[in-house]
Every structure is written in structure tokens, then in C-alpha cells.
Length: 260
Image (cartoon, rainbow, N blue to C red; front, side, top):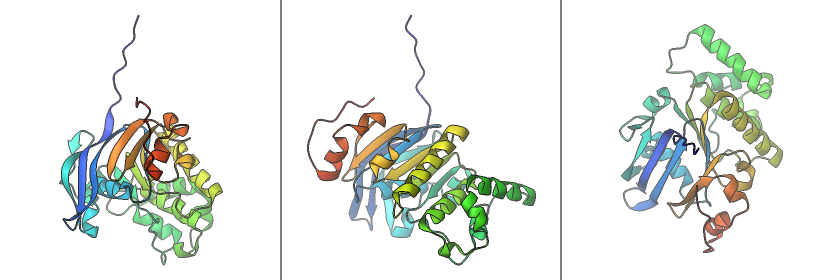
């Protein structure tokens, strides 16, 4: 007897997205993909392919760089979010860790973490409880809690940025190039931590990353973009031994594997 499985519900749907900066520089031409609720999706592509622009479009952060969505739709939990403001999206459970970590260097580690609770309706006791959870998850941050964030290592700052985003209690967490500037051992720690959060808490993840071989072993699904367009989406395991990544990074024209 044949068994039929209902398709997984997407928490995020990006539909034929186009983005331009200053109304003339077209950074994204046609990007479409879904992120399954509770899934771990990686957005792969060479430097300049449009990964960061796509994440900023989802989080409604394009305006700071004079960018705008010119076509397409972005749906979060089934509703279009094109008209939503960034703070509204954060309160709805969509948070982003920006490229370069963006910690406040002159604030302490703990003060940086507390910025993740601003704008919420948490009691002091709840904030203290969440801080202790963060320190349990990131023991290095507890040791450095009174130190200025600018004096911590790159890996510690990346963990701080992730911990701060988690304090907003996201349903979907976006991360832009989390491996950038980190030693290989720290990169492995970061992705192992994200995998653990995904597995233990069911957190939905969308990670834009250039270091494909570091992230693919942890991801479930992958999207490959090239020159501002999505060219493939399927299971992450199908990319590990395929030519799709070399095609998109170096311009070779080969037959793409069939996406699932």
C-alpha cells in the first residue's frame, strides 16, 4: 500500500525576488526558495552572488543601503511581509545575525546580550533566566560577561551575536556568513551549535554562507544562487559530491543534478 506524506509547511517563502540599489543597480534578479518550518536551509553562492541582499530583503533591512524590492513577494508564516518594519518582524519571531557580527564594542558582553531583550515584554526574572540559559549554552560568554565585547575574539563575538539574537526568541533565525574571519575549529563549533539548536529546539534556520563544505554536513536543504538568481534547490546531501557549486562559483556550465 502506497503511503502519501503531506508536504512540509514552509515558514518562509521567497517568490521571484528582485532587488535594486539606488533604483539602478540590480543585485538580485530572480530568486525563489522555501524554508521548511523546523528546517535548516543554507543559501550558497560565490561572493557577490546576492546572498546578503536576499537576507536583508527578508529582514526588511535594505533601506539603510538605499536598496528596495522591485518585484516578487516574501511570505513569513503564510503572510506577505513586504510592508512590515524590521522591529515588527523581530517581534513576530524573525531575527537576523548580520555579516560581521555587529556587536557593540564598548559595551560589555552582558550588556550586548541585554540589547536582545529590548522592546520585549519580559519581566526582570525572565530576563535573568534567559541570560543564564545563554551562559549555559555559551560558557565562554559567561567567563567574559564583564569584558567589553570589542576585546573578545572573533569566535566569541560570533557566539555573542548568535546568543543575542536567540534572546529575541526567534522562530526563524537568519545568519549571514557566520564563518567569516574565523579559524576552522571555531567555524566547526559554530555550525555544530546551530545544528544542536535546530535539532533540540526545532528552530528554523536560514544560513547564507560561502564556505559550502563547512556548512553542508549540518544543513538539511540547500539553495544555490548565481549572479543574483536561484539556480537549484534540493537536499544538502545532493550537493556535497556534485558539480553545482563549482559551476556557480567558477562559471563552469555543467548539467545540474535533479532537485528533490
